[in-house]
Image 1 (cartoon, rainbow, N blue to C red):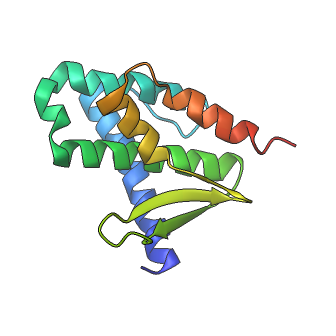
Image 2 (cartoon, one colour):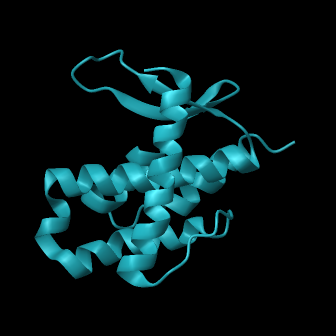
Image 3 (tube, one colour):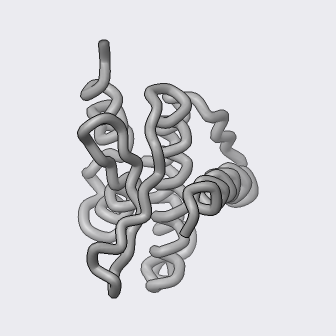
Length: 135
């Protein structure tokens, strides 16, 4: 996948997160750092609204990727960074945001909150990522 295609895919996915959040919960993701906190609530709201169907493979994949893309686009705008499509395991490729010597699995932290532990905060993960690059 070309970098320009990956960048467009991630921007489109982030835009999808904005539209989905508006349509499902009447909440607005405005591209700000502060809006990341909304994702913590929205992820759990999908569980409340759709119960077990929110945990079906396709729903989990979609939710984690669109909200991970949104987080990455906000990070890129605030700090910098480049999307990277990692195919080191061809059976499980994934996308991370890379900046300087670090990479961030924003979709992965969304997955952790949605599937494994509702006490994990995507906002705390995001804040830590930003803090890693504070000057």
